[in-house]
Amino acid sequence: MADELARPIARISIECAFHGRPVYVKLWRPDGTGLLVHSDMHDIAERREVGVLRFSRVFAPEAQEILIETPSGFGEDLSIFKLTIEESSTSGPSGRTLGI
Image (cartoon, rainbow, N blue to C red; front, side, top):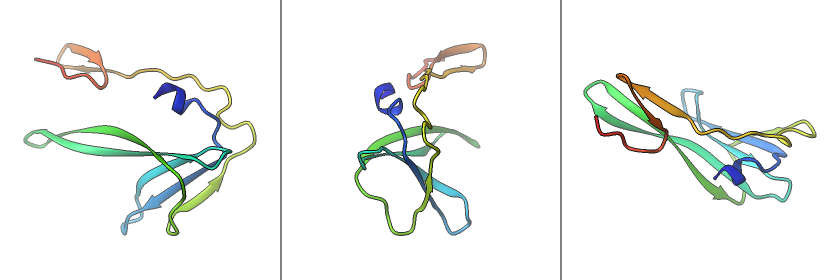
């Protein structure tokens, strides 16, 4: 996935829900392909949720999306880092299940 995220970005599109908040973002490449980025929320305990980012390839913007052109050179020299989560004195790389 790091290779996919490190590719140049020509445009960004956003779709907002009825309340005006973004639902997802799509990163569009100069070749016209895109990467959809959105979150899924999971209940892990009463009144506690964890959000997980989901990625998938897309090939055309939807009519209702807001399209934003990025400046030339945007995203040409990106660095990708894996997030480390710390909870109750326990830490681990994001995307892994921790047994506590």
